Length: 324
Image: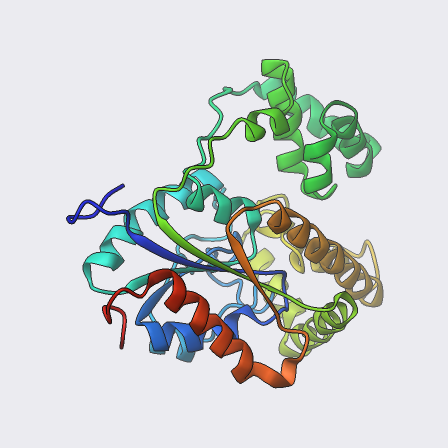
């Protein structure tokens, strides 16, 4: 993918675990560098799912152009392949407007699929196999299904949460159809980028991050997460849809269905979000080309911002093309 001058288009990327502070920093960076933001979150694409996905506010989105937010109804089976295709179309459009494309997100597979021209496996499908595994999960539980994946593809099992039944089944299906684990197919990727990349990662002390996660969830609950999920279900969104498997949604569905107490739902959400953050960091640690900023000292926001500016300047600035 080359621009009219025969060079790769630039792509600025900000990654990091949930609750680390990506949104606040990204808005400042976007204003300074004349960016348009591409959301790299697999759940923010869904309309009506605002509280549980921690979307930028309407005011923030009005100030800085955002893409890949509110593009589908919650019943839609959104995929990483569609995400990659849409971003491929958006990057040159943003570049032609004289803006810097800025991918911000925490869904590792989605971000990596864009950064390194991920080639998706054409393994086909076996619907009978999928139904069989779904029945197995219904009878024995998602943890048992996840253990069957760990036996044939431990690397994929480490990256997938047991509750992510759809992707666990897909990984099993790939092994069933090809005889090779999905992780082996992924490892064979060339990981060459169609872009001139500048990737910045945010990290912080683990215990501080966990405290911020719990605080964020308390705020979500106070803002009406239960009512948001109830409204989605009443509008006809299927309980087994991709959207309802997202963190914050599946736990509240269990509560609303009378399976667990609200206290237990919040407890599970906090636990699962901590585990998710740990998996995010593990995924990002295996990506290349990332320049990390430790934001543990949250009072030093201006210092972190200057560090970020310096990284972009060192990577991208040959002239003043992105000055707002």
